[in-house]
Amino acid sequence: MSTISADIEENLSYENILSLFRKTDDPVLTAPEVADVFDVSTQAANYRLKKLVDRNELRRKRVGGAAVVYWTPRH
Image (tube, rainbow, N blue to C red; front, side, top):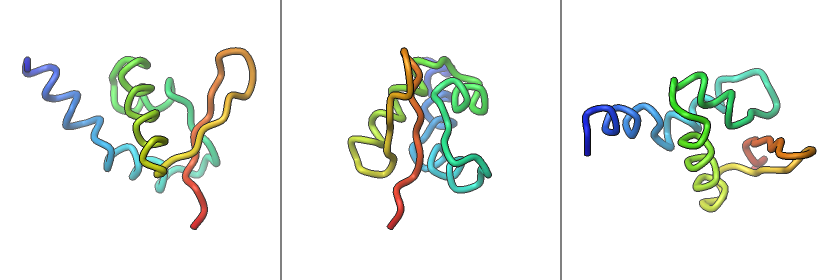
């Protein structure tokens, strides 16, 4: 794994993403917004967000065209 890939893995960890969702005032976030915060590609952010949905730590909904929003589930 290259140094750049390792940095992305560390910065774009599942816990860092979940922390972003806990800290934001926005009710939902998109993959491009997450990518912006962590300075990674939208594709990398989208992959991690989908994995968090698979783990039931986030929810997602297509809201039109290709637009998808993510949010934390209520417990």
